[in-house]
Image (cartoon, rainbow, N blue to C red; front, side, top):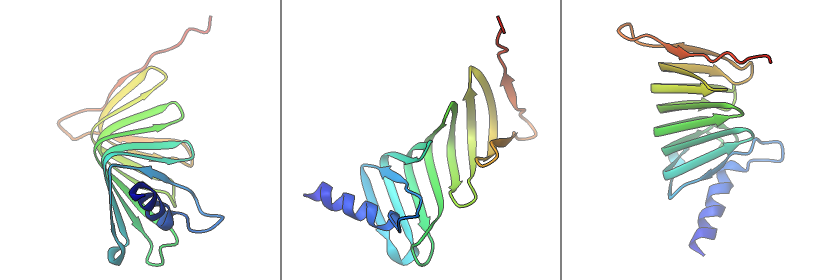
Length: 151
């Protein structure tokens, strides 16, 4: 009964209308702060939107004043993001579903097709599949790129 109530509360703010994007979020705990338009998911959080998956210890969802759209999703601690063949791990992530932008910061590890890139921050445009990776001035971006044989 309690799980059913939680599922209803979970999907109510995120199932806006027939044309809305769907984001499914599962966690151990959900705290809703309607006056601030914030929902805080904590404990083994897993969010799915189409082919984008986010895992973290805590996920903060900020919606618009009218609760019609999700403005921003912040993932905190032990962040893992998976999109198609791309995997990104880091300490914190900020996802904007409206402009399809994703920023991951803190001990970032990017893996795709056996290639590995280590940096402090990655900014990804999910629409154009472009990304920019940065590191502090004392560190450098490191990449291990594996060339595949055409044989």
